[in-house]
Length: 192
Image (cartoon, rainbow, N blue to C red; front, side):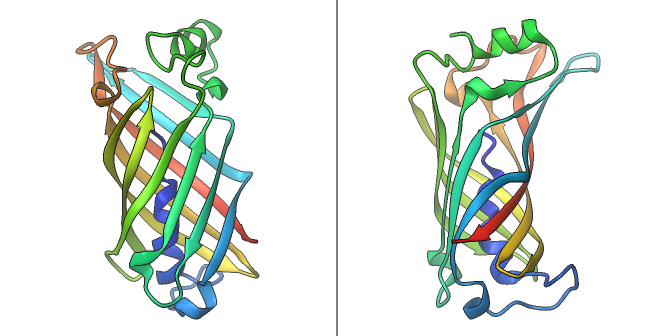
């Protein structure tokens, strides 16, 4: 669900070099990158009627980004999230999220995102479309990605997007809690 990570491919090709706004040639950005857990994060928020809500993060995830030097649209992003690593800072809520009411970590150990298209939307931004699978349900989702930097075989990007919980049979608590999960992700990748 927190697979905003997918936007990485587009941003790298569009990019910022060393934090400055100069275009990166696809030939320079081309290659395969492994997402590093060091400096990366997948955070989410769910609103609640009357204010407040629920904020959390996933502590374990992995992924790869393959940037096609000839055609950014053929680039690929694959992300795997381990829902058993969800954390909100509240043990009771974490246990509930891991239960069969939400992530069902006993029977559904992974959440995956596999990109199907990458479309450049600006000098350093793109929309990544792909298939998100959680709890045995697969749906098409879109995430916005923005390249934050590229230097020395490493890339950094910010990815965001909204996912409807009901599409994955995780809509317990609606309408008090929003059906929309807002994802906010930061990814660091290293060329492999």
